[in-house]
Length: 361
Ligand SMILES: NC(=O)c1ccc[n+]([C@@H]2O[C@H](COP(=O)([O-])OP(=O)(O)OC[C@H]3O[C@@H](n4cnc5c(N)ncnc54)[C@H](O)[C@@H]3O)[C@@H](O)[C@H]2O)c1
Ligand SMILES: [Zn+2]
Ligand SMILES: [Zn+2]
Image (cartoon, rainbow, N blue to C red; front, side):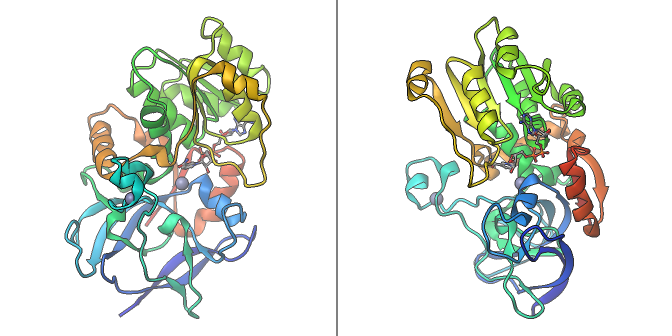
C-alpha cells in the first residue's frame, strides 16, 4: 500500500515552493522507506528551484537529512526498521569502473530508489539529489541510508548528509590538508565553514576565511579561521599572500563556485599548491585563464563531489568526533523551522542571515 505524506515541491522555475501531498510507494527490492526527523536547507535546493541543475520539474526538495528506517524492501540486509540513519546521495555501486579501481568515492553509477514518488495525480517527482527529504517520509535506495550513533540529534546529524560533509571532505579528502598547512576558504556559508572546521581538524596552521559579508566572517572564526578577509574591501589574492609570507596558501578551497572566486583561488595558492572547487557553478559560467599560468604555477586543480566522501566510512567517524566534542556540528544550525518554512529559509539564505535552517519534523 502506498502512503500519502506531506512534501515540499518546486513546481516550476523560480516559483515559490509549495507544501503538497505526495505519494510514497512501498519499498521494492533494494529500497527503503525512511521517516524523516530533520532536514537542512542547502543552497543546492535553491539551485534546483531556480532551474540551475536541470529542468526536471516538479522537484521534491530536501537532501540533508537524518531519520529512522521504517520499512525495507526485498533483499535489504544492511539496514532494518528502527535504524537511525543519515541519508546520502552517493550510494556506491561497487561495480563500476571507478569502484573496481578502488576509488569508490568517484563511483559513476550511484544508486537511488527505482520507483518514483508522485503527486496525487500521478505526476512523478524528481527528488533533489535522489533523496527528497523535505517530507514526512521518503523512498531511497537502501545504500543511501548510513547508520550512525543515535546519541547525535537529527537536526545536527542530518547536516553531514550534504553541505557539511562536502566542506569537511573538500579540506580533508580532496584537498588533503595536513598538519602545518596554510589554507584559504572562499565563501563562508555552511560548506565553507565546514571546510574551515575540516582544516582545523586536520591540523592546518593558518586558516584564512574570505567572504563579502562580515557576519559570515565572524562565524567563520568560531569554526577555526585564524584570519579573515572581506573581499569587498580588500584584494583577496594580495591579502592571502600577505598572510602566508608572500607566497599564497598551500590549499585554496572555492566554496562559492563563480569564475571570479575560482580565479582568486587559482592565484591565491602557493606554487605547486592545490585548488579545490566545491561550490557548484551555474552551467552558463565560463572561465578564461592564461594557459601558461596553468603550467607555470604547477600543482593541482581539483573538484570535490560531496567532499570525495565515502558515507559508510566518514559519517559514523564524524558523528563520533562530534560526540567527543571535537567537531562543532551544532554551530551550523542557525534555526529550526517547520516544513512550511522552507521558502522563508531560502530568503534568509539569500540574504546571508543563516548558516543552516533545519526543518525539524
Ligand atoms: N560539491 C558538493 O558536493 C556540494 C555540496 C553541497 C553544496 N555545494 C555548493 O557549495 C556552495 C556553497 O553552499 P552553501 O550552502 O555554503 O551556500 P551559502 O549561500 O550558505 O554560502 C555561500 C557564501 O559565499 C559568500 N559569497 C558569495 N559570493 C562571494 C564572493 N564573490 N566572494 C566571497 N564570498 C562570496 C556568501 O556571502 C556566503 O557566505 C553552493 O554552490 C552549493 O551548491 C556543493
Ligand atoms: Zn561504482
Ligand atoms: Zn546540499
